[in-house]
Amino acid sequence: WAQRRFMPRVEGHRRGVQSVRRVIEAAAAEGIRYLSLFAFSSENWKRPADEVNALMGLFATALKREAEAMHKNGIRLKVAGDLSRFSAEIQESIRQSEALTAEGRRMLLTICANYGGRWDIVSAMQKILRTHPEVASHPELVTEEMVSANLALNWAPEVDLMIRTGGEQRISNFILWQSAYAELYASPVLWPDFGAEDLKKALAWYAGRQRRFGMTGEQIQAKLQGGSEC
Image (cartoon, rainbow, N blue to C red; front, top):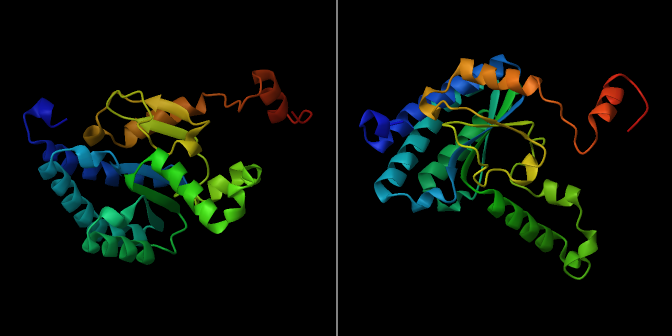
């Protein structure tokens, strides 16, 4: 977005923060109960140092500025990822923002920061081995439910709709386990320009999808019409 306008890359990130606010407001207005946004991936540390530092600054500022508004609007904030690499100041801001919004019931907003889907799955398995050492010699004890319960986003249901902006058509290591049956929507709109109308287009597209979860279309129709169990 910034490069097309001959601006520094960080300006695109600044404008992207404004899009975060617009999308949160639009999602809440649409009655969406769970919204997860990919703010900073575990691979983003590979970017130029000045860009990473700018992103950290924007993240810290946005946490302090937006937490009060989320609290007033009944939106609960949680941050998922390996937070150990963040500064003590950012970690404290995360704790304070999560505590301030803890009673929000209108929508649960998850910001994924220093997060990666593969890291999430590996971390879940490490937790399982620490809490259930017996699975090392009895791997058959590991279940999908056990893995799900130990994932970073274990408070959220599986993904229904995943939106990629800027015309990208890849998952990019984002909540891999939970997206097994997600509907993937690619928007040509770059993130700093993405807003309420773009979200509505994605939701309209999603409403036209038939989610089969391995069954046939006929089985789904029969289930919807109150037919026999499939």
